[in-house]
Length: 108
Length: 114
Image (cartoon, rainbow over all chains, first blue to last red; front, side, top):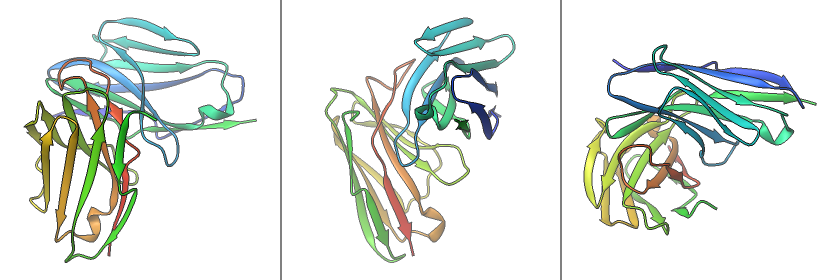
């Protein structure tokens, strides 16, 4: 079978750093993506990792370890506008499978 | 704005109604997708079209019928739905359906079935 696990909720303080983990079990794995979705909005693409290691894009970084079937999204210098749901998604064969999402709450 | 539009944004229908959701993309993409997003559930892939051909039907009930007349337009025809079909229906597009192609999502249609 296939599955993705990520925490349902995470709380952090404005200006801090937060890491959202994702573990997966799937065959035919190509890579791991992250999407952000604000309340009432559509998911928007954040990052994609096909190879092991860290990819950095501004305040957001994403990490993948294929041998551990594990990845994470790292958000630095948190801002209130980062309050949203974050989905990890596995690309396998010709389709993308989403996790249940992590709701990020940011405290002032 | 992601370049993917969906209409209507909200839809309320009875179980005996027939309605259609429309998706349009202006990005020159060749792959289009329908997803269902229910409360506290993952985004569920329903259908994939690549170059107007359906390449994926993720065991979706026949009361949902997709149509892709060209690479820019995608429809989801609905008939005799059930209350548990109430959800946010998202359309997405990407350059092609394989590999790491980033998907661009529309704003979704919030469907309520009474």
